[in-house]
Figure (cartoon, rainbow, N blue to C red):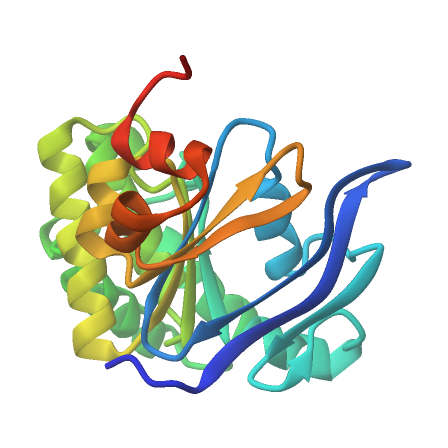
Length: 252
């Protein structure tokens, strides 16, 4: 259930590589329990923003607050505690090919908990059951379809019961039916478990199906050019580029 509480607060984030600034003074909130999407054209900084939100890179300036705690300045045990608050599903799934699904999902438990082996196996099986993959615990990733691999990656991302789940292009490479099934899984996890989702995507059907709110990044603006509900931006945005994006219209 979405609340007005800001679980993630980004303030004045400036990010880039070397002297190349891709995002300048970006600020926005992600509310607890919502599905929040980050949109934009190629090269606009979507992946760069995601990498800063999950702590892979430090920004040139600005803050990323998770539940009020700054991920940018946190160190040591404080930083590890912050990292445990969220899970990440990468675009490729990033499953280890030589390990079974059960072993893949166990990895976060092995790294961050002191549970006995039997308990880790049980938790991993429960997470795979949550995404409909309980019968495939002993399978290798290569033995599964692309959609099933994405589901397994989500199971691993929720192994530690995170409050936030980041998804990087979850529908990439999937057929429309499989993509729609993945959308339904995201909605079910958001509504039943109260997980807050931050999704990087450009797939319009998924955006309309799952996103409570979106921000749209623009390469030339080096920041956010639109924020709101996707249907409202499609129908009422005063920015021509935003309307073209949501209506799939080529530039004249």
